[in-house]
Image (tube, rainbow, N blue to C red; front, side, top):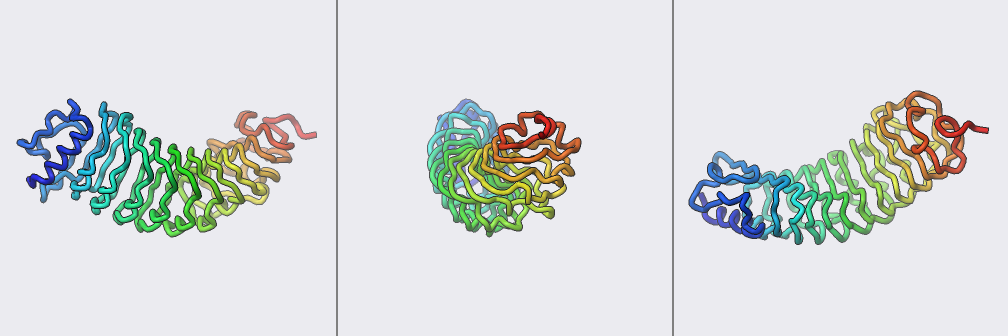
Amino acid sequence: MVMEFVYALLEFKKALGNPDDLGNWNPKTDCCIDWYGPTLECDEKSNRINLIDFSKMNLSGYLSPAIGDLTYLTKFSIHNVRNLTGPIPSTIVKLTNLIFFRISESDISGPVPEVLSRLKSLTYINLSYNKLVGTIPASLSQLPYLEFLRLDRNKLTGPIPESFGKLAPNLTYLYLGHNQLTGIVPTSFAGWSFDTIDLSRNMLEGDISFLFGKDKTTYEMLLDRNKFEFDMSKLTFGKGLWRLELSHNKIYGSIPKIISKNPWQILNVSYNRLCGKIPKGENMQKFEIYEYFHNKCLCGAPLPPCK
């Protein structure tokens, strides 16, 4: 085994406080056979680790820049390690084989690294439930195979980059909710179907009716608690859309009758400016009053009858 590679692993361990869970990480033994702790997998030909997966481990420390020397990694995952602090080191730029990158539910801070855009093999990025700040790098649009992006539950500011339209059609899961994003949703998203799109709990504004359409294959849309303003009566919906969160916006008009044909599991249009009668149908009246109330003049079951 190449000693530089072992040194990088030991530096990685040291930055995490040399925890007991990694006590068997010993340079005199084979990391692919004898080391325990997180999930480790090795490339059979090179005998070098290509996967590291920490989950719910009692670790305290930071990510060592030595992570960049683990150049055979294709998957790097740290999930629910609450005492992990500090920024994501820029040395990750050397992990050119990386396909899957996750650091979620930790206390890491600093910006979303611009250098992620240089890891062209990435298909999955999850940096959710952290303390990341700054803007979303427009350069992420340069990742040709990106399918899944989670940056939700951070403290990110600024707009959603217009260049994200370049990620179509590969990017099908986009989670940007629970941040402090501002501005409008890029019109480059028009004509593009996400499987899931989460923009909830930001300060986004404008007309997002272009996210809807009868030919869309989207099944989850979380758009609540923003400043979106458009006429709901003009919307059409893809047949597979089963979750639609629109509460706490400035949406006006009426609820279109066609909406009753969808197999809704979750639907919430409360705290808007809607008027008119709620369309009849099992898929509409099964919801509680709380999914409809606090609108301008919306009426009909489960709200009081229309006058």
